[in-house]
Image (tube, rainbow, N blue to C red; front, top):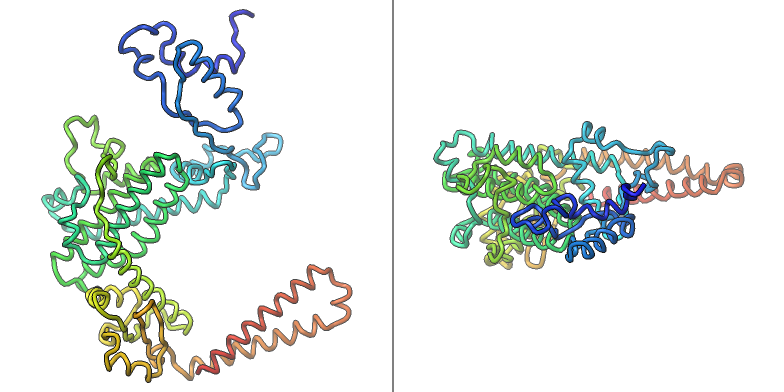
Length: 470
């Protein structure tokens, strides 16, 4: 039939035929003039010659212009085991079912962050579920800010908290260490995400936002902000609380803007719960989709590497104390004593954030002290029975053993554990020494038993070492 085009031939006409070619070819202000040519084509590599090449050739031949200047190729979406989805195999995943179970944003985010140049994308439901949990985490962060941090705030206060532009260097300089840290990380993230999107590193960009929101904002700054907001947690002044509210809203607002291209629905919803600056007169709607991007072209965002480094020391100290608590099986609710040794500006910053360290490491506020490195008090700590934690060069923490463990109780627990391990080692050793097992059992089973024995012996050695320390 002379009037029927073959599938790929007609598809090759798509970039310009859909916007009025050839009827409006010479018409000013037509859709063809406004929208053709485009800039970027996003597609799978499997149709590079079927479709992409035909669009380019026909566009140049029939309009004199290439329909796009950039072709962004990604891998194919495959089943979780890496095989190609097929109705005959019965491994096709219906995206509508996935959206119904996990939400559209979780699926979208999983696909975008799963993109690695040159590789296909296995559609793993566990990953989609984890990203749904990330959306829930984001929701809970927003809930804390709006229903706890901003609870009781007046309309005037909420209006002032609305984000109308980046934090200036003048305001930044008035902030405390944790606030400088999280704003610096947020600004660095904005710069990195902007560069990643401009260079089509979409998977890397999405993963960076995840790590920032979960690991830095939620796990660290939100917890520290409680020591500013609540008197019972160490809050001392309204000025300090106002600064915390400002930073919480600013960082969360900026993060929602950065995450919006990846999770448009949940971010748009949450953004409308935050204090917002008045919409511009030329905005069609007061929407996150139309809000300014955090990193505007030609602007530099304020950061402080020194504050990030100093707070890194604070984080390392918190983790070391937490690890020591876990190693000595300290009860989760028990608060312990600590003596910290540091010097110079680092010592001053740690003293200012002592209440944050008390909250995050679960220390006894009345039994915590910070000493100047090299002082008599610092030297005397080496003679006491305590656990010494080396945080970094010139920074140490000492945890008195008397506060970490009940010696008799811990000795009884370790002896009981040692007895149980000895029985299991003897039982498994006899099994391996038995000719009937070693000769007749499959090699994989024998190797598994040997590995189990080795692990048990390692555990036994560690328990004996702990008993020797006691």
